[in-house]
Length: 105
Image 1 (cartoon, rainbow, N blue to C red):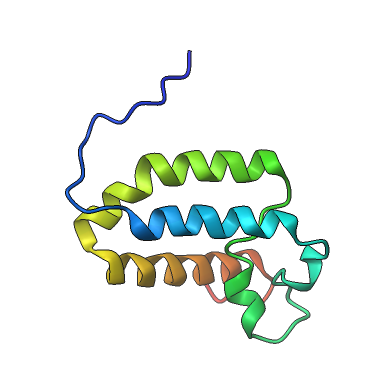
Image 2 (cartoon, rainbow, N blue to C red; image 1 turned 30 degrees about the vertical axis):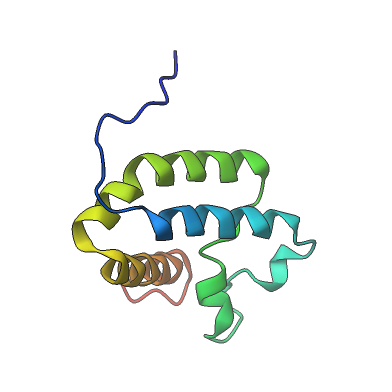
């Protein structure tokens, strides 16, 4: 049985976590997601950041949303909103670079 309950109580509201979940949900309605995806053939630009929030299916979005809701709000509560935003962008960009053939890691 899947128990969807959180035992911890945050003193800060997870504004960015809920915002990232909502932003990634909005990207489900885009028709041409390939233009926003980061590929090694493209130059560095908007696609390296926008591809962090795009999902290929509703199931992928749902699993990402559950994990973001369960775990990311704890990190946001500890490090703060601004540092959490920087961490998400930094690790998202590093993950895109790691998965591409332009990888230096």
